[in-house]
Image (cartoon, rainbow, N blue to C red; front, side, top):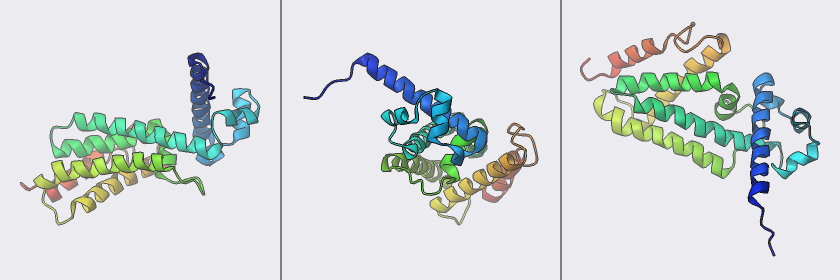
Length: 207
């Protein structure tokens, strides 16, 4: 006979799991993603390390939960940006800004999701489905909204990859050099409008 978990016990379990993830993020933000350890987690939460295994099967499971958290949050950033766009130029600029803002406000999740900093960590099938689903949504927006109104010899997939590469490149350089400055400032943070202008000149059918 399976013993059912009471709502109160489940609620307490969920709250502790959330505390573990929040503490893991704090450790990763301070020392980098690879700095996470079960011992340090236990110390900060004031519990014995074996107690953590009641909530997660190990460090890899914590990374995986944070990977899902990161892509869920990133999707919210992109969704908000897309909702405010009136032209494809707006769409690109707002998406570049959303990518950089996500990275600056959640550097530990950005590092985990986009830079593969943990040797041997392979996201679960569920986590990969989430990340690839978001990627496919981005490709679909390029195919349906951008590709028909611009001039390019690239395929829709190549076009999407070019945009991703430029977003990531600007963001990585900004974080590496001036992470204290907001989007729109600094050597690389200020370049988003210039990049969009270059793409407008290259791709606009009216250009």
